[in-house]
Image: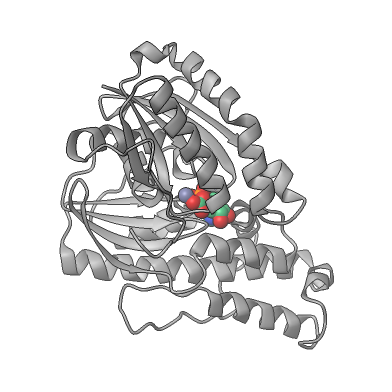
Length: 354
Ligand code: KG4
Ligand code: ZN
C-alpha cells in the first residue's frame, strides 16, 4: 500500500510518500524559515499564505521524486492538529479536495503521532544521506516528543493505543530554545543556533532552575526562559524596564556562548530526568525520540549516557516537520482506523489533546 502524507501545521509545507509502512519513496519539504526569520518567529497569517502558494508545486515534486502517478497512490493522510489553525486548514482542504477528486480514502492524523512514526521509516531514498534506523521500534514503546510546539512523554501499548504521561504546561522545549536565542541575540530557529553556540561555551558557567511539577511527567519551560532573561539583565547591569530586545548587543561572545551552553544543559536535563523516571516505571521495550529538538546532540548524549537501552534516531530532516511521518502514520491508520469523511473532516489546533 502506498500512502501520500500532507503536513502543513506550522511553517513547513511538506509531502511524503511511504510504501508498506516503512519504505520512504519521497520527502519534499518547503521551509519558510527564510521568510519567518525576518520576524524572529512564525507569523501565522504569513505561514498560511505561503502554504497556499507552494502546496501544489510541493505535491507535484513529491510524485515526481517517487516516480509515481495518482494511479499508484492508495490513500491520503493529512494532519488534523495540533498546530496553527490557518496553516493546518490549507493542508487539510488540499487533502480533502484530492481525496474527492482522485477518489482515494482519506485518513486524519495527529501531528505528534506523526513525529513518533518518523522512527518507523527504515528505508530512505538517496536524497537522505543519514542512515535509517536499523529496525522498527517495538511495543510497549516510550515516546519522547520534543518540538517547537510540544513537549510530551507518551507510552504506546500498540499502534493508536497510547497514554499521555505528561506534557508541557506552558512553553514547549523548542519554543524555550527559540525564545532564549532571541534574548541572547542568536538567529531563528533558536535550537540549532543555541546548540552551535553551546559548543564554544561552559555549560556550568551559570546556574538555572529546573521546574518542579505536581505531576511527575509534566514539563514547564517558561520559568527557565524568564530565569535566563533575568540573568542576562543582571550580566548587562540593566533593570526590568530596559528593552529586552536591546540586551543581546551588550553581551560578549563568550557570555553568549556560556548562557547558551548552561541553558541547553538544564533544558535537556529536565527532559532526560523524566525520561529516565518513566523508563524505570513503565519498562518499555523501546524508546523513540521525535520532534525538532530530537536533532539536538546534547539530548542524544545525555539519553545515551543515562538510558540502559540503545537508541536509534530518524534522519534530522525527518525529526523536524515533514510529510513522510504523516504518510507513515497514515499507512497504519489505513489498517487500524476508520476513514475520514472528506466532506466533513474538521481540524483541531488545540495542543493539549492527543
Ligand atoms: O518539530 P518541529 O520541526 O516543529 C514543531 O512541530 O514545533 O520543531 C521545531 C523546533 C524549533 O523550536 C527548533 O528551534 C528546534 O525544533 N530545533 C532544535 C534543534 N533543531 C531544531 N532544538 C535544539 N537543538 C537542535 N539541534
Ligand atoms: Zn512538529
